[in-house]
Image (cartoon, rainbow, N blue to C red):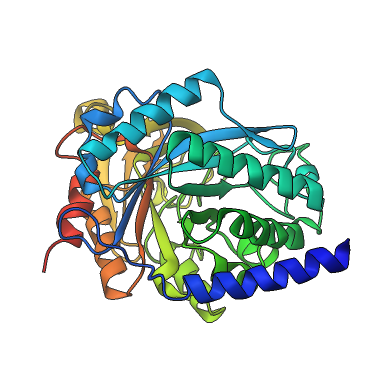
Length: 371
């Protein structure tokens, strides 16, 4: 059985390599952008049409989960996916991608994907759902193979090769007509220990780099949660991840950098350095569409810009609150970074955090379509 599976995998790998090696990381969407603009979307689907979806190339429905070995679509998921697929009437180039997992959404992944039978049943269920909804692909958001995430969640060293086997199985079952990507942690331990990059990337359209939540709910020291560049105090950044993966041979045109359409707010932060790099405790999560009221001067916040990290932050001295986020300035710089470094594009979490018009998606699109 193992020999048979190995031969099948080798043949499939060669076929997929031939078929996908010509697939460019860059795609041409409606409009003049030649880069992928990918929105993660967590919602009921009924408000997605309020956004300028003509400026997107992909929308990733977040999240489906496992039931046994199969990808599960509950009734709420079904109605949401139908709503998203209907957006193709406005943007025929839009690709609707289904996603598995999310933070806390993949507790049984290590067990399900540890066997050939489990991987095969999962892959067949994915194809069934893609055909059922006329969707365009799958994004894996297993947080995280082979390393610790949520306390109590199982992980083993075997997750790493099992993830590779899963990608091979999915590509064999889905063929080259469906897109396949995964969400990657934007920190060194994940980059080193979770993925066999040289083995999986030939079979993938993109890797969606979660270059946000670098400072997160578990952090005890404030910093930039989605900075473009590293600083002496904070190594992890968008640029660090891109350069590190480039050194491993990951094609730049398959790298999608991440932007945050939300702020992370920390409490109990001392006023030194306007709250930056101080002891802290996570307090709140604020969407970009609410920045004008939550992070404004009337609420006690002062805005600052870090010229090294190329990232904004705000501090409320009276309440000792520190906020880290992306804004229009940092989003424009990230978008230009995509262009200047020949990357595949930019993705963000999440569409529901943006304004219906005049928001961060508009900034991305305007930048990527500028000359």
